[in-house]
Image 1 (cartoon, rainbow, N blue to C red):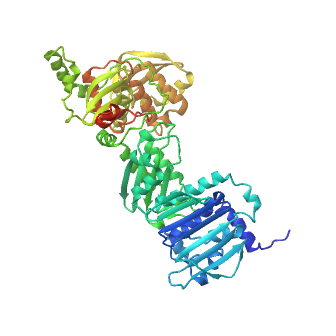
Image 2: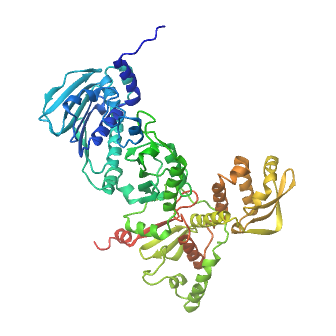
Image 3: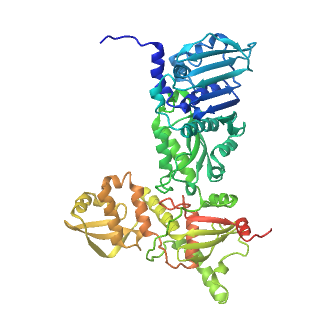
Length: 588
């Protein structure tokens, strides 16, 4: 076979497969060029999901007459001239491939007028062949009209989806760029009908317009910096997370990216507060010097590489994780300000469990005398009312307990209205955080059992734990191997001293069987502690006294991430006085 040089048109058509996968990819490249040109108003018209036509008009700086044809030539760009420029690139486009690739597979008309030109000029391209520029009429800026995408590569066209699907991808592209550029107005029309109109506005208003009011009302503002790294934006509250990944937007130096390192850092930040079936929503903007990130990984420019990937990962993780561990007081204030609180997932039923006492003796010491005084003062008055100020104005964030509902929930009154608490979920979080703190300090107190408990286990479990008995003792479990198929439990963590030692040990051994001791005590340490905390938390249908209920509320207020249990379910909900008034039509 003879080696030959491919024609330029064929080279462009091959390259188009990487740059222009579908209409949305072509639209992204064109919009990025408009933004690089300084446009503040961009008009987008689509037909048949962008397959039939993509027309973008902007008011940017325009293209000079003698450079118009060059703009449709491969590897022609005004944005870089050397390797040093590439390493410092701050523009969205820079490779000089997109317009040439589009011109190789579609019918393109490029019309532009620079600020100092007497009139506009237009050039047409079809299947890679360029015409001579001709005079045209338009104001300063550029219009690019793309028709019959992939007409010259019909095999590629067959891989496109339905018109509705391709339009949805195009609309998402517009929304992403609009999020990163709130100072620019965007108008999107499809088949002659306006679908999206965004005026230039502050970033928070643009987020509300693009991601919706539900995201705005249930999000937390993020702003953090470390050296040359900065991140700002919004992340969803764990209680408002859904199963969808559609609202996950990350921008690095203004460029929308899909980066596994960033996704992993954010997932880890939510790990302790999010139900495993749910996904967080976020809109985050990361800024760092251009030479610390490589955007020239792929022609689509959505993949990037950080020079210090570990540093970026840790920075993002800690910035969001600290925010999600904010005290309950802040959540109460936000919950009261919102129109309504997100409801738990439908169909979830609280498990029926046996009773066990609360480990909240320190907080209970304050309330016990109050409860006793109330009982002695007036036996005809409901004792719980004696523990609540008349107006609740000076109440703590989660208020004072009024009653226990159906053996599962605590009802409390605070200054904003009423609070409902899932007592098992709340206590589970309290115990979990105490276990983590104790283990971090390498000071997990153990409770020695008066009579060691023997249990029969699988021989493989015995073989697995035998070399690691000292490590297990470090988390409060003192076990001894009594035979190839049995162990004796001599002590358990003090925080779990009222739990069933057999069930606790079997839970640990089940985790050991799946992950091994070394991995369990390292990377899966928190999952193990969460399992233990679930066994050690107060169970449903356990009747609590008012001091116990109030003690639990105070413990929650002093505990990080108290808004969610270890499995990501909400632990409490605020119902404001305004919502109560609306229920009963007061003031109408």
